[in-house]
Length: 129
Image (cartoon, rainbow, N blue to C red; front, side, top):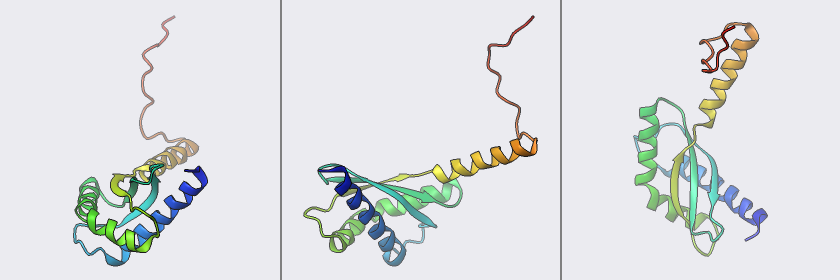
């Protein structure tokens, strides 16, 4: 399948899953989650759904568990919302890129202010003259 078409399908699945999770999934374990991206296999049999979770590690694990337990429901609703011959199997993966971006931004801010948060790691190749 052409990469451009697959990309459109990825975005469509992402948008519809986000809507379904927001409007129809009523699991108390589900925290504030965002569907950050979807990667669909070329044969459309499987889709990796990357999920950003706001909260601590425990809340993120609970949210992923809620999504995993609702996988069949989500796939069924997705099949009704998206006009594809076969609805892909879904697997949910935690996306921690937002956390990493915040940490990098904090390091940059500290470097600009001249206040490092931790000493630089030892390189192990120190010179002794």
